[in-house]
Image 1 (cartoon, rainbow, N blue to C red):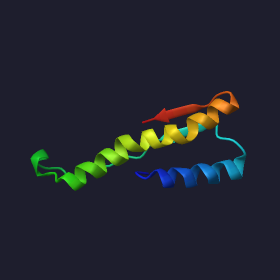
Image 2: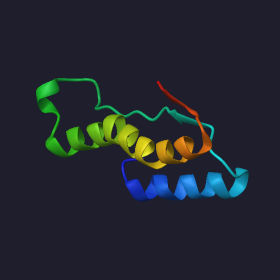
Image 3: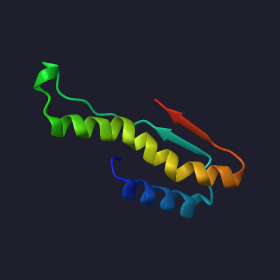
Image 4: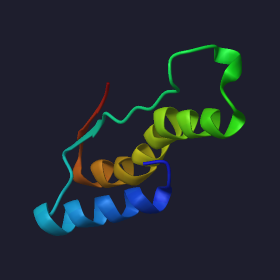
Length: 78
């Protein structure tokens, strides 16, 4: 979920199968292993922020315009 192209594929598949998108659930999450926070390397930190934050951004960019054209929808983020 850290790549926009993955969302584009998912959104296309959902619209093709169901004709509309009424709900989007952001439920992905990633973290580092338990331990010293200072031991987290930058590559791991980048993955954590990509999955936990950027994925929500990608989801919104993909589904909000569709939901707007449909007259509404719901996005749940856990």
